Each structure stands twice: as C-alpha cells, then as structure tokens.
Image (cartoon, rainbow, N blue to C red; front, side):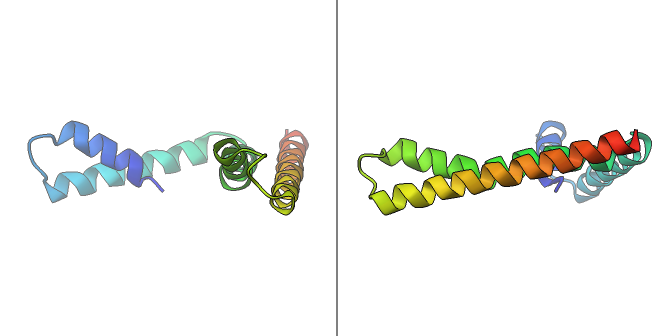
Length: 111
C-alpha cells in the first residue's frame, strides 16, 4: 500500500542510481513511520474507516458510473443501462452513507 509513496521518494532521492539497500531502507522507514502514526494518533482506526467508507465507494462505485454517463451521454445509453447505472449510484450512495454513519458513530462512542 505504500508502494506509490515509496517509489516517489526513491525517484527523488536516487535520481542517479538504483541502490537496493537504500530502497529497502526507504520502504522500511515509511512503514515504520506509518506504524508510529497509527499507534500514537487516537481513533486512527476509526478515522481510516471514515475515510475508507467515503473514498472507496466513490472510487469503485460512484465515479465510474458518473464518468461513464458523462463520456457516453444519457441519450446514447439504453433505458435499461441508465436504470442499472442509477441503481448502482443509489446503492453506492447508500453504502457510503451507512459506512460514514457507522464510522462517525464509533468515533463519537469512543470519544
């Protein structure tokens, strides 16, 4: 999960060459810093659940449907296709709302 961040840091620091030991050190430090943040920040798990419930549903359910309709247009899609996309958007919104409510309820309960 930290691969994109690690790759960006490695590209910045190792523009001249590719040393495997430095790559391993960078990735280890990134993982250790993530662990330290997770252990020291209160409600980190609940915060990640909140962010995940919003962003995961947006990235996997809502945005693809919205972009599909934007690219192809509602007029070029069949009625069954539009109904199915609308149902997916409705279901995604319901899942996002439920996940957000559950995460916020856990944060308030723990606080």
